[in-house]
Image 1 (spheres, rainbow, N blue to C red):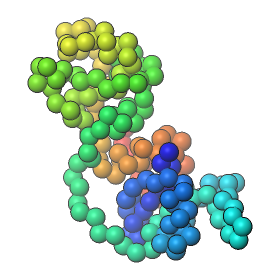
Image 2 (tube, helix red, strand yellow; image 1 turned 60 degrees about the horizontal axis):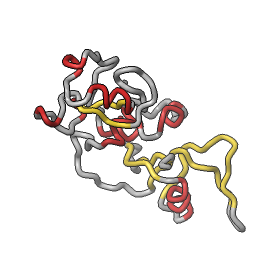
Image 3 (cartoon, one colour; image 1 turned 135 degrees about the vertical axis):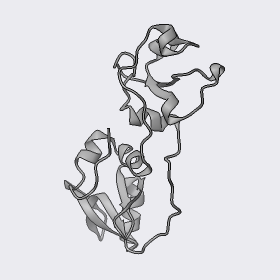
Length: 168
């Protein structure tokens, strides 16, 4: 589970990492803890430190500019908060609004999270053809929003106020 946000030295979000990786970066003095879980601590024989929720790298890392968040099935499920776009129940699959057989692409604007029952019921049709309206329209998250969404609702609600909250 990737539950620690990594900020660049300039405080811009870079990625999310596992707790183990975050602790290693802090212990190697490559990062500092910006925000920690309130009552949790990591203990070892000779060291004790707070469990990091947000860490900041000590040195600036140049990252090529990325205009768009890369599309992925996991990203669509996270964007839609694992809720079916047709009925609102727990989603486990990704459905193409315009089916691939009709020229639909793997893109943020053409895919929604769906439960297996509705995905099977919609089959190879558009929502209009199947009589299944979308509860919410798909959108393309910014790269920073997509990264923050991977933290989950509890993760990004607990982030400091100075860190921008994702849209949607």
